[in-house]
Structures are given as structure tokens and as C-alpha cells.
Amino acid sequence: NAGVTQTPKFQVLKTGQSMTLQCAQDMNHEYMSWYRQDPGMGLRLIHYSVGAGITDQGEVPNGYNVSRSTTEDFPLRLLSAAPSQTSVYFCASRITGQGGYYEQYFGPGTRLTVT
Amino acid sequence: DQQVKQNSPSLSVQEGRISILNCDYTNSMFDYFLWYKKYPAEGPTFLISISSIKDKNEDGRFTVFLNKSAKHLSLHIVPSQPGDSAVYFCAASNGNKLVFGAGTILRVKS
Image 1 (cartoon, rainbow over the protein chains, first blue to last red):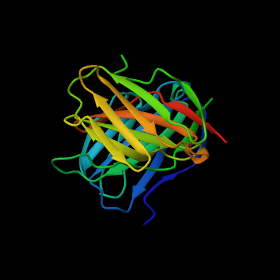
Image 2: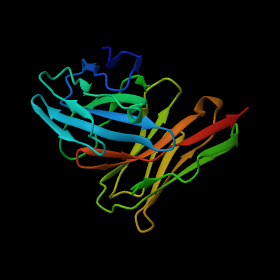
Image 3: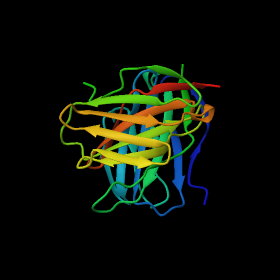
Image 4: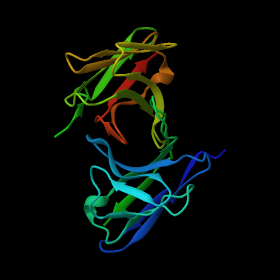
């Protein structure tokens, strides 16, 4: 199992450009999510999905779009990049179930710089 | 409005001694609390969790304590090892959402 993979590892964008951060998992997890990590702020939830065709907003969704057409993939789209979106982005996945907490597995991250 | 706070940005401990990392939260509806460990240039990895109905959970060298009346949890690492040097994030689960603290950098000196 590759686990959770993210591409690219690094990206530099100019203000106003668009791009898609890719995330894939091979563990057949229903739940997938995107976080951004900024200094002094921990990880903040951007969007999440509890299964194919279902997405919802997290804490900081503005400026980002997601879709979930397959169980394996959960891309994050930046429609018009802004310097405030400079951050490290992490994708994560886990199983869903009742009666307990299920560990989230994180990808290695994408470091995005917007100039 | 930070619902999960880690007030110590960093902690330095001698190898073999106990490391205690602290976390406070404000939302009494959180049902699970977790600790994640993160090395540079890697994603966070799950360390240990505790249900809101328990007050202690132990896994090898790692023990998490939960004090619901104080809305406080702590992670104890005994004995601390140089490989434990990393950023530790406290997190709390609220349904489908996980809320993270800002992290504490732990340095274990040999």
C-alpha cells in the first residue's frame, strides 16, 4: 500500500493563477480531508468528504474547491491563487464507522508559495 | 477563536526523563482527543487517542490524561528518547471535523 500520496511536493504560483493539488489513497477509505498548516496555527480543515459524491466545508474553505468522483481521489482546486494561500497542504484519509475514533492517515504534504 | 490550545511552543527535555506536553480545549462537545507527531517535511502521524468518557489511556511509553472538568489533556512520554524530538499536535474530534492545536516542538537532548 502506498497510503496517502500527494502531488506535487512543491509549487510556486503567481497571484491569480489556478491549480489543482492532487491527493490519492489506496486504502479504500471513505473519509478524506484537506488541511493547511501555517506557522503558529496548527492544521486547519479546509474541506472534507465522507464518500464519493459528498463533500462539505471545514474551517477555512474560502478560495478552495473540491470534488469527490471516486473513493480514491480527492483533488483540491485553487481557483485564483492569493499570497494568503501560501502554506503547506496536507491530505488525509480514514475509515468511517460507529462507536469509536478511527485514525487519520496523512500524506507527505504539498508546499505552496504564491507570489 | 481557538478551540484547542497548546500554550507551550517548545519544550526541551533530557534523554531518559519525562516529557509532559499540555493542551487545553474550550468545546465540551468534543468526543475524542488525539495526539499527532510530526517530523519535518513529513505528514503528521497518529500517536495516541482518548475517548471523552475516559481519563487515561496508555500505549507503551506514551500516556494521555484527560481532565474534563478542567478541559485539559496532557501527553506523558517516559522515558524520553532523542527520536521523540518532533512537533506534537493535540487535536480534538467533533463529529467529522478534527480541530488541531498550534503544536509544541519537543527537543530531547542526549
